[in-house]
Picture 1 (cartoon, helix red, strand yellow):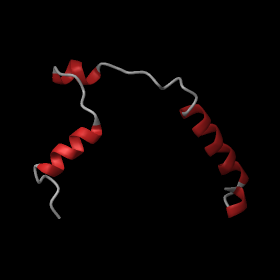
Picture 2: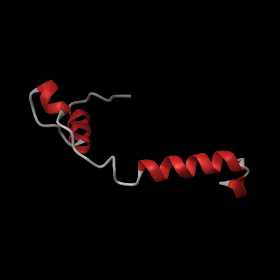
Picture 3: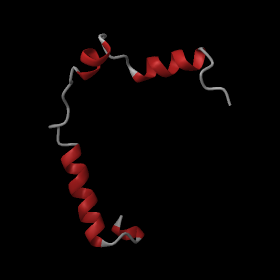
Picture 4: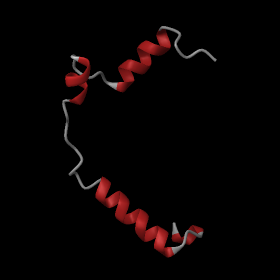
Length: 59
């Protein structure tokens, strides 16, 4: 990124941000959907497939 003109402090900040986000400590499953909606969560791909098939996204 620095080679493409991004200032060094921003490169360092982004590197730290993504190393923190991707270090595995955020890789847990929570039960929020089940507690709020009373059902298991759905896979987003399944949701998108069903919504598209139902015509929810017509352009």
